[in-house]
Image 1 (cartoon, rainbow, N blue to C red):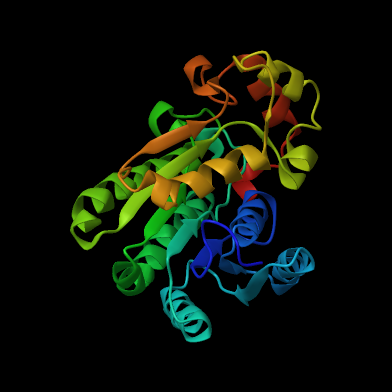
Image 2: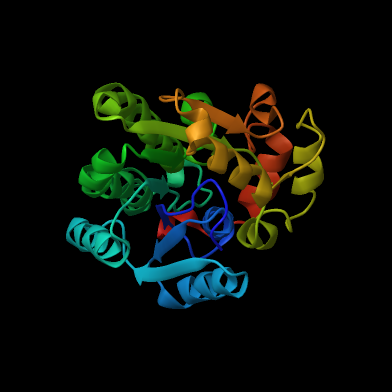
Length: 275
């Protein structure tokens, strides 16, 4: 697979074993990129690679916990050793669960911040040298509640807000090196995980859809197409942006910012304080 906007380029996708990460990895590969998907478990990464290769693309997976800076640094070196370059980093790895703030344990808060905020820093920091050579791009996957807040997701909202600040700071600081840094804030979306853990609960999906001006939940392709554009030369004067891809949902509040959906989901969720 040689044709496409990313022919001859290397793209690193964190959290690439499922959901949005897998979809974006497939999309970049379809556009000609050599894709490295990372995640904590090898089996889902192998599935992502198999899907890409079966479609004629080029990909490989590396087991890596983004919370571990030494492992991330070694992963960055391995990517360059295997492909000779790094052009795009997509920071998608995340963790989340629903918990009323008064029941959120310190360990639960820390676990999400370690993955989302610290993990994004680790990968971005160790991608820098190669991104500077390539005059490349960083794309951070956040959420609109990075600026609005989100009941039941204090830990994730704080972590995503930190990533938004990182996005803007690095866009200003690394522009001198030709590196662009942007973010996408997906709205409520269908993935394997959300279909199982969120949209299957009570009437949450129907309640949420009513709050989306464009009248539907998102699909992984909605986010992948935005990612392809933001990281491409077509967007070469776009940096420091945080693009909601959510059908204007954020203008009506976040996924759980209305009582009925919050109560339905929180009531069905596991005891978050034990995490």
